[in-house]
Amino acid sequence: MERYGSLPGELSAMPFFRHGRSRAVNAENPTGEKGKGGMAAGVLGPSRKGSPCLKNIPPGETVILGDMKGCGIISHIWITVDNQTSPGDCFVLRDLILRMYWDGEEDPSVEVPLGDFFCCGFGKECMVNSLPIVVVPARGFNSYFQMPFHRGARITLENQHVNQIPAFFYQIDYCLYDSLPEECSYFHASWRRQPLTEPGVDYIIADGIRGKGHYAGTYLALSTLQRYWW
Image 1 (tube, rainbow, N blue to C red):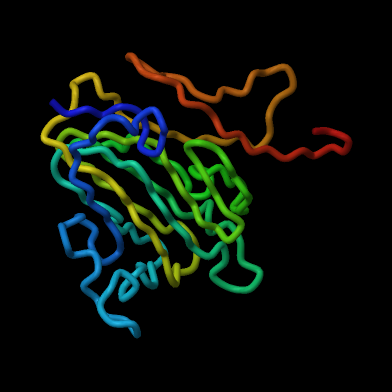
Image 2: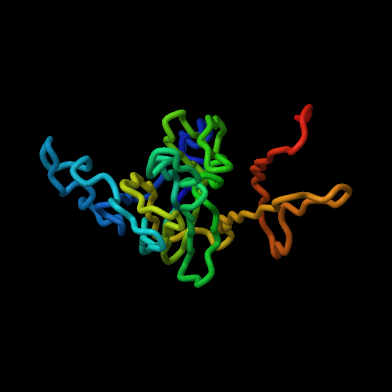
């Protein structure tokens, strides 16, 4: 019998054996094939550093970051990318769209601009220090949300920026299992914005949610047109 316990890294999970088979996805190995993540040779010889990133992603292009088969749980996503493609440029982090599909679904369960997914609004990086999301000053984006799938998972990135993205670094860590409990819930995330809110009218954060689940939380970024306001 497999035990899943709590989140990896939590002290409460340490007494339990986790019988998962660890895998990692990167630019060289988007399917997470065992032993294929460090085949390219760089100046230091064959290693993961030999081919650590996707290069020159054109405007309008959608690339596959991960295409994982089988039953498993994603435990960690790490990404870093420059927030400018040219001097004075901005909004790269808003113009890269992250999408995640579970078990062959056609519509994504996650569809969020890259920066906003990691709690960095308006295309500006900031320091984030929380249990599920961590961002360091040099744009090291980390997600520790647990994301289970029963048959497979696909993660894509669309470049809606006006310029190509010279280099996109990432790694997705996950474990494969023989099976997962049927009550495992899927991870979802959505994004919306409103240019100007209306006085006296509630701003809708989420709607149309159906079925059972856990509400993990909300990240809210806002600016004001007036002085002396929080």
